[in-house]
Length: 104
Image (cartoon, rainbow, N blue to C red; front, side):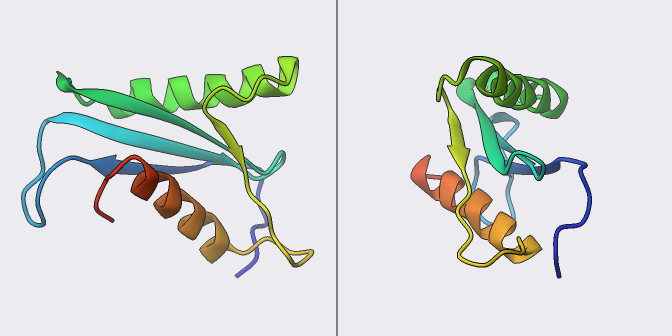
């Protein structure tokens, strides 16, 4: 399935074992299909995880990259085909979570 919309995709990864989710720590990954950039925000394992704050920080990092070109916690997606597939986005978010040692 192709990515057709300009609405950002949001992925949340939480600390914990399968079947058990921790209230503290986590990772939010936001993908902007227009710029084809991932922005991400990691919550410390001592802090309560807040989805809204994570999305806000990740979107802010994408906006800052668009404005200044600084690559601080922003990662581009590379697609070998002209069309970007939803599965490409999902796999990209999982790869970022894996880099941060989150089980996916």
